[in-house]
Length: 307
Image (cartoon, rainbow, N blue to C red; front, side):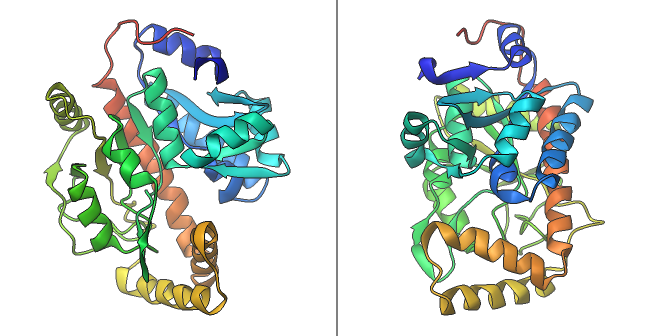
């Protein structure tokens, strides 16, 4: 895999010197928002990580290489590229060989971050088990089960079957850590009625659990669920009604496979008058901040990786 990696200089230096680093996915740039809002959001997330004293490493595909850390020019090219692909594990060989532009999903970001020695990853919400299609399980879940990173999210996307998603995480041995919460957040909402495995109150506690988990030769991720900020979070009952309406529309229109999630997210945003998008952006910033704080407690000055 080394021949396909291109590390941004500050990321390379941080890896060499054991500085705290936070991996960030890039599907939010390629498929999350229109231009130029997508570039603005990417810059905000990186700055949020920097404000906490960590180095951001946004991971993306450009020109037949996997870029770990993006220059401003790279960000612009990725945001405006046509066509561009949403890259999960199955797509990596295709995108690299065809030199396509691509934004990484949770699964692809996890895999790549682990390859170079990054230990913390911030995202919005993980994938999971789809409603009405319990056989449709995101690649994110098995990848979490075998990739030892701390993953900070606001739970799983609320358009999914959350109880089933938690059951699969349990089956796969992925611990779910509630950051100052006893409940698994429902992405847009702070509550779901579903319990986490344990509640913690500090970034240091997260790091201690992760380090102990991996010392025991358990190679799963540690999933940290961070409720969305209270000022932008949406009431669970209200957003659930909109999600159910969007799910019905997807079924009636014959939306299937990889098209389901973007369709549902867009419809929920439209049905909520943009309020779900505001909640989404706020939780992304909150998760980036917490991930950077956790990273400080996981990194020690030592050689990790050399290109």
